[in-house]
Length: 370
Image (cartoon, rainbow, N blue to C red; front, side):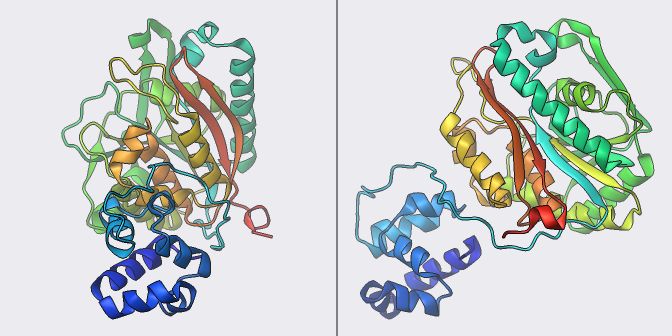
């Protein structure tokens, strides 16, 4: 299966060499093979199918070449902007850090704890059942420490960079949602957190080491549903999409953490929180983009979730994926090819989003693509 880098390289080469483009138009499959393309993707480029290329994570500034310049469709008339899953499963061999014993993701919708009665009871029950399954996975994995990614809601940090909580403890409550009784306090892992900070900086990335991370619903909801009664240290990893939204940067950040995880000698877990689609914008609250959520879930199930890290910011934000950076970091730590079990997905308009629970298959037998 041609990857995004191969596709991008082929398109750019075709754009630079008119003779090569003429040969490609006459024989897409044959010339495409010279460029490392399989017959399907050669046909996609020859047909000017920008939607397929965009769904693979190619930038709009490159895909415009295949319609307006390769196919001479001046008005880009075939493109609809839809993201459609092509049914392909990743052929990458999963290679998570050897001591990564758990990875998964879940929504952190505050209403699920603060006022679950606003949503349909059967949907709430199915969603909570998904959290129970994920909790069982965590218990079975026996992590020493759990990295939990969430986005900045009510905290105030000094920079616009990703944040790692380096404190000895972390605490807070959901007082902002009139439920100060919904609180949480967990032990941190200051030494390991500092090692993660140094790993990110060694990769040339900006990261803020925060001695104090006030917990809000982004962390309290998963902590209360998944870790109650468990003795597991927690390292918060906080994104700041309001100050900078870069899927590529989130992928690079997650990849930079892998060496520190592998060198720690600890049993490490990573939980991404947030999403899927929801809007806080005035006039849009309550909308759910089930089609795009379904596209993302299909990528996760096919072992292709990390492709999200190649998407441009606009289409993700346009489809309500404000918190997807939290997931991209986790997926980059896990690496290519690992597939997800989707335990729950519930579109809930009253609480305002498409809420999900997913578990990543890290075991070699589970993750194998047979």
